Length: 112
Image (tube, rainbow, N blue to C red; front, side, top):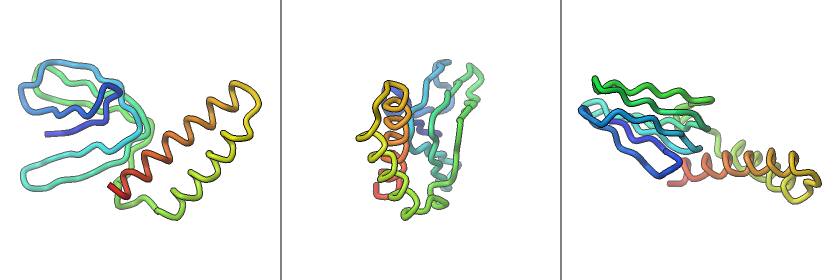
């Protein structure tokens, strides 16, 4: 089973799942293989669930949650929060908001 952070909410996928395409938002993807559980932070992407019970996850970035450095995450969140506060153009605001969203999700992955 996998649980992916879809834009519509957390989505669990078991064998026999209806074929689906889901857009991913920044968050934790959990992979269950028997009794083993692995957690990965994904920044964005798509999950393709096929009729043969295969799930393909295409992520812009994926890293095991235990490889995230909480100090760097806090630093990145502070930097992008500051950039958001001082952004003067729509592009600067959008770029800063994406950074805040990604670093906030990383922070939640570490604390939740």
